[in-house]
Amino acid sequence: LQAYWDLARAEREKHDWTTVAVTGSVGKTTVKDFLTHLMTAYRPTGSTSGNRNSTLGLPAQLLSQPQSVEVFVAETGMSRPGELDLLGRILQPIGVLLYTRIAPVHTEFFDGIEGIVKAKGELLSYLADSGTLVVNADDRHQDGYPSQTPAKVLRYGAGGDARIENLTDLGLLGSRFDLVLPTGRATVDLELPGLHQSENLLAAATAGYALGLSADEISAASSSLTAAPHRGRLYRLADGILLVDDSYNASPVAVARMLELLASVPGRRVAVLGEMFELGELAVEAHRAVGERAARSCDVLLAVGSESARLVAEAAIAAGLESVELVEDADDAVELLRNRLQPNDVVLVKGSRGVALDRTVARLVGEEAA
Image 1 (tube, rainbow, N blue to C red):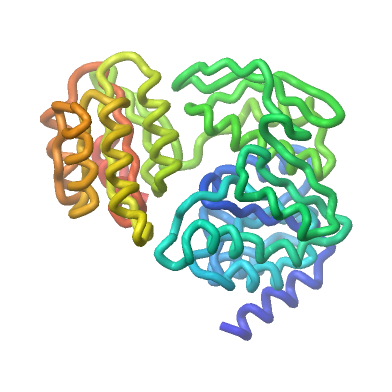
Image 2 (cartoon, rainbow, N blue to C red):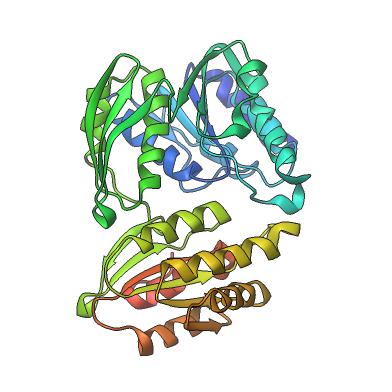
């Protein structure tokens, strides 16, 4: 492993890339994909593919970049302290360090949210003094990061250097808003469901601005953005049924966002929710909170998994939701849905990767699980 990491570091030293590191607890892959899409329209840009963001996956991606690359966008993930320090040593000097949002994810391996904030900060020492730190102005957990680097700081969000104004929520059709940057503004039509996607685009746009893009250039490139597989992709099934596939992974914040989206749509709303893994001592409280939120957001709940799924189901029933089902796995979920779905239902599928709800989606839409 050490030789592998040394090889990746040596490869990085060969190239005069501008390296972008994207980290956070939620939205990393989407923001990385958005930024790569924006930059590719104007400069030769490479990136990590999928969610290959670990100490195994990221070096392989770095070693596989074409010679033409000028900008390399790297998603950097962690499940334990020290992993981002290792990735930072490989990627340095980092030209732009972008934080999405920090939340209680993988908490069983850290000393609470404070431990996660500290571990996420491991990348700061590898940000070039001439580089740019991009932080989320709406996330108090990032307030201490700017003081840890001499690099330029850009804040995105309410009151930040980059922000969204005149936001119109188009529901499952996406959103329209004015993107405001320090040197200009432009209207963005984002055809992706969920207001959280506008925040993801804002994060990517702020990093794009740090890399030289204008508001007009970002607006033009944003018009062709699409959702990655299992990350909010929409499918129209028979009988007018609309399926929202967000089955790639799940955390308390991400589930809450998707349930908020589901609550905003008309018609009978069906939530298929799998367990959330690696939450440690927060697991019981988090799953109960999901059940309570589901009771306010959907008409039918299907909880998938074992003990944690049972907590979701019980909390939803206690909160007043009458139509609640509990099944053990993704295949059982398919059979139940085929018997229970009605014309024009809106179905949200969301759960941690280990629950494999992508299999549920695949069988419903007639594809193989990816």
